View 1 (cartoon, rainbow, N blue to C red):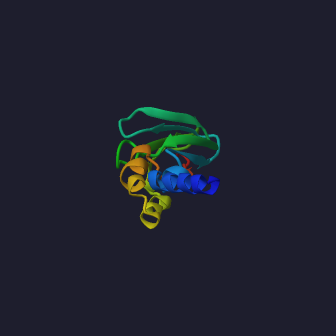
View 2: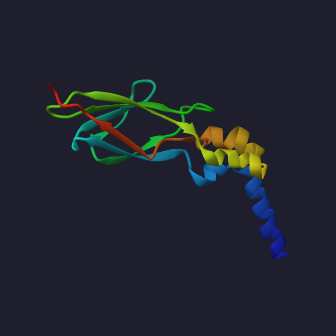
View 3: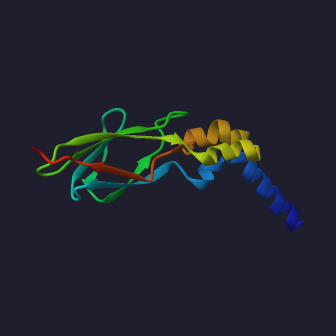
Length: 135
């Protein structure tokens, strides 16, 4: 009897969950570094809202999604004494775990759960900017 309950619970969990949501979640950690070190950085979302700031090296936590089926895009601006400022884009890509929904038959995860949680997207683990010395 207990084995049937455990098996039934496992099957329901697999069917009703998204692979990327289970493995990754809706937030991502990104390591922000620069050459030279100790540069100030500001991270803004697609709407220009500042979501993080700090000094390199640092690790930040960012949302993967900007809504259903919409990966988040960020602009990261770097400033350091005696160096030219630099702005770089930080874009999401499709999370490999999202495709696990196709393999394991998780239609709910594929169409609703992973897109709604943002887990279908992935941010790079590292972002590094090299700032040129001012002339």
